Length: 218
Ligand SMILES: NC(=O)c1ccc[n+]([C@@H]2O[C@H](COP(=O)([O-])OP(=O)(O)OC[C@H]3O[C@@H](n4cnc5c(N)ncnc54)[C@H](OP(=O)(O)O)[C@@H]3O)[C@@H](O)[C@H]2O)c1
Image 1 (cartoon, rainbow, N blue to C red):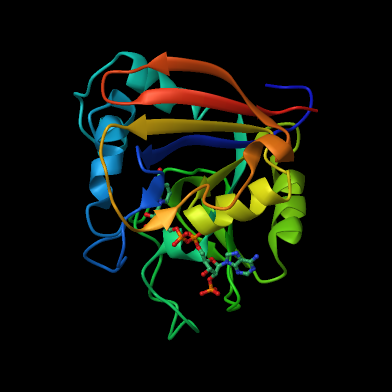
Image 2: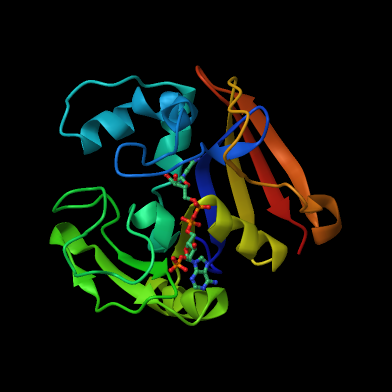
């Protein structure tokens, strides 16, 4: 556990051409068309397989990187599109996320949206809380919930872009996949990371992705 709570992006996958999701997200394509190619590094890991209730899965660099992303996290922040395919006002409370009755978060999860909705308590300690007051309000509530643990911004792209532009992300771990998406949601287009104060502090080759760690110069 760190002494100061950090805001971390972990295990966020992008293509060589910089996309963090494919185009045309919907119920059949949660990650957009061809989006699953981004996550191929993660789907084989023991971390992911265990989340699926499977005993197998690969250990190695990719698995280690995925594991780190779940260590020391006291709250999560997600964008509404990552939470699900429903757009606009919520028609009812039936959509409860992609992850079944027991989502893999086990902490409060603050979901950014313009459309209010009551909190949603799930099995295993996950509670989705819908925040309509913007990124700073979500962060303040997430930090309060996390205490001395870190807050993880899970995604998606639009959410990370806002926190980066506001220089609020302390650490950003990208898993760069050797694939081209061509279109979709671009992570860094129009964002001058260098001027914002980010630098690359480490990179390591995994089995199916290159892991790159960026940090904000304090
Ligand atoms: N590559 C990876 O590792 C990875 C990881 C996670 C997710 N993803 C993928 O990323 C995609 C989602 O990314 P995305 O860029 O489309 O969307 P997103 O960041 O998940 O959500 C964007 C939506 O959240 C709401 N929102 C965001 N900022 C807000 C603010 N400041 N105030 C109020 N509401 C706000 C808005 O929804 P409303 O206005 O409709 O309420 C907005 O349209 C999905 O395909 C997901 O699977 C990829």
